[in-house]
Image (cartoon, rainbow over all chains, first blue to last red; front, side, top):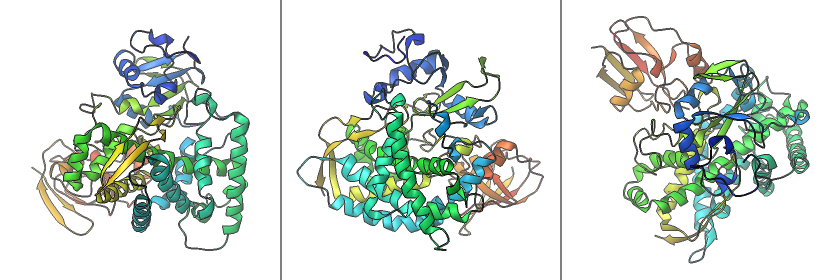
Length: 417
Length: 105
């Protein structure tokens, strides 16, 4: 059984499907996940796997099937959690992404104004200034890490702004974000143990609890996430339920950070792999918004979401039992040729470019999608003003994780215009 | 052939002839009317084709639970809010006037 196998990865073409662990995070680290998912879409699009480090689960790999599951929120619940692994029962930290109706809407509505278009307009100038400063300070004629100096730097600044977080401590936000998504059970053992993660969660909850009390009742007209929670009667006392507060903080920290960070890095990689696409965008800047959507599709920064079956059900001829885990592989949907033409090619001017699976579908669709698109658009607008080339100097280092698809290191050199 | 009038948020009007059997969203996409994104392509699962129906010659179909769940998240929802992908052009529904929101999200 390949499940939990620490040895070499089995050949996804020749090994019986029953012996393959679809969730093996090393396929994302080695970027060799595509053939397995292509085979699943073809041979077993609704696929049951009996054993894995996360237990038994179904894999849904076709675009339309994923949409169908996400629509049926009564049969396919987002509770207790939306990643393949279960949280320990006693430390379950509920957040609105892992809630069904009506609680989902109540808590999401409280924080949604932070990404309302009015707020986005106010952010735009700020993001542009910061992006310009970050790009201007990049070294010339020497190799540097794009992940650290650009992607991580800019998304950390954005996150600090969304929380109105103490500026000098902002690096903590990225550290916490990494720790939250580094559970050893979804990182082939390379992440943190349960005890280590608990310590991190305690640290950030302590800081955020203090911020809550400092801000409570100060009546500032700020649209930061903490004051938004305080202002909404439904969430005004969330601090009294520390696990719910922690859960929503973790959601907002990861949602506002890892995803955009990895798309910001992925774009550099794709434009090096597809230089003719880079030339197209250089020749016509109006393609930048379309390129941004294509980067988000091609990267799929969150490769999966998970649902849990609430009642025995039939799904496309398969019997699913109450309690079964159903994993929706967005990375696979984004390569489904029945919906996306020539899906394995990065194409900045493709038709229906916004029609991808990276943001999910239905009520849990990514809340920050417009902010993410704006951050990426600004990075590329400012980068094209400054650089003739952003040249990859060696292979990027990818993280070993089946929930976050991303990069820890990407060596590049820039050539200024 | 019904006539659909789209009014952008800034007041710009577009009057177009619509084919029976396609959705208001598809009409907007066909004529490149700004203000409708339609990210999910018509499945009522993204909410980015939100519009306000100002007038219709005939009665509109009821809002189903899926459409309701997406409209429920819109901060700018009004009583005449609809997802334009869920409104099929037909002779019974007839001519329509549709206002577009300030933003899609």
